[in-house]
Amino acid sequence: MANEFNVRRVAVGNFSMPTNTAANTASTLSVGAGVYIPAGAIVTGIKFLPAGALSNAANFKSATVNLYVGTLVIGTDDRVASAAIVQTAVGSLAPKAADGVYVPAGGEVIIHFASSDSARTGIAFDSDVYVEYLYCSDRDIA
Image 1 (tube, rainbow, N blue to C red):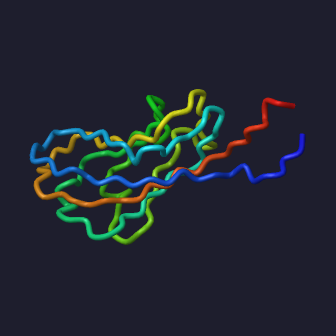
Image 2 (cartoon, helix red, strand yellow):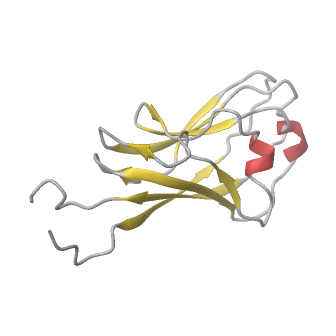
């Protein structure tokens, strides 16, 4: 089997954090229509890059962040959002498995923020999300 194309790919999307006033409100957001990871891909990395200022990020101190492909969790479940998403800096979320996460059924990329024990008043930002993955469409042909 010859691989004439690079198999490393990156899905890129953007999301805007909705302002919530309740302390224990979770948010599940699409990272953009069509930001899709195909079945058979192996997710190897997740990066965040906020596009501008983060307003009142201190109010988000205890919430965690995670990424999904459809219903499949692809990130670790213990990353504090304010540590992963930092103004004008690249942040990361490790894949759930150290060597990568196999995606058995393709789907859109979804971001989930768990509830926070602190007030979410005035939190506002948007961020780009980069999901790195390995994929070879002709893998099953040979």
